[in-house]
Length: 212
Ligand SMILES: [Zn+2]
Ligand SMILES: [Zn+2]
Image (cartoon, rainbow, N blue to C red; front, top):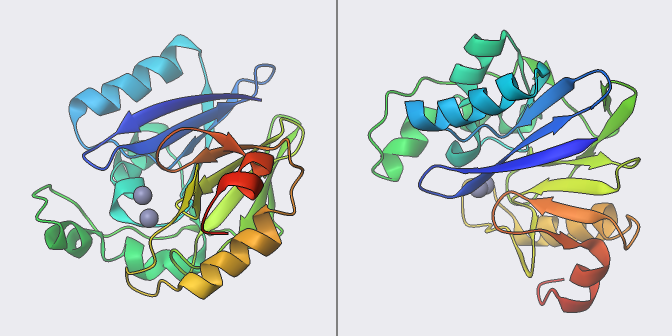
């Protein structure tokens, strides 16, 4: 599976496009686009590689990860896939933005296809395994692609850091438990693709992350 990263919006979120080079099926993970220029960057990439987008997935429903949900849903005719425990954040998108002083025409979002721990999605023949990692938000999930040896961790785990837990329904003890039991048990060579900042590996975080 191939992965491309875009960095969008004022929070510098990582939006990932995963695609299978054989079937050209693609997933858009955490569409963070906030304007026409950012939409175009994503669309140009999809068009250039002739990708057929089959999944729209949110690692969690904080505003920076779902700004572009409505656009992607409409443009590519997709349903929003996310964990149901974060729907209270998705439906609250306009208020989340207001609290950060952000003036954008945003509409409440719904979770249309529920993703739960242990679920598997496919891109071509390759698996995307859903791992529930609550703590940063109650419905946070990681996306593990064992054949390609990477895991998208959203805002649960970053290179050298972990997600904040001071936002609604965040819980630091839960987050650390999620990381230790669900992520640190993956193979050391697994590449971490976080929701913000650059990549790492499970092995490197075991040694160097001061929070775990
Ligand atoms: Zn977040
Ligand atoms: Zn974020």
